Length: 244
Image (cartoon, rainbow, N blue to C red; front, side):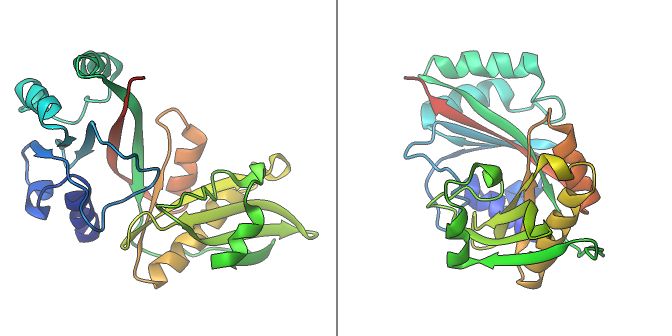
């Protein structure tokens, strides 16, 4: 298991790297540790669950953890995000005023890829240059403008001066940056998405940062982009939201 990911999940799930890497489920009271991933972080955390290394990591409120420990202490991660299991978990949460918010797979890449970008003009955007795209609906996946996880790097493919696609990276933590991608309809099917994600991944790796990529379980095109850019499935994550 990747060491950076192991240490990151330990911060995110309030446990030790050894607990992330072992074969047991762990249930840890949530506390906001320095260095945690903070993308779209809310003020209060009811429950978060990571499915990784064949097991489950739980962190959240004590009363919810007690219920989860009783029900899920020996449950593996392989089928945990199936609908029947999620429906049961959602019912358990609602007794405490919470519900399932999102559940997503995440991908990692640790090695650079060889990228042929010769068919396109390539332009990089860094820091304040990204502000030019605030409010631009074309690139809402590439740039999130989330204050807790600032957008730090972007790369665009151009043809005739027109942007065909944009990949962006947000600094979700000091050691892991998340990649998002948007491609204009006219350029879909050309491989622009995987090319840009691969270019951005390579640049992030040069900085000593670990790039990761999240998407929806049903978004097959996005998952294929991740695989084509050299990413592999690494973990899945569920977060809850407060009812009302």
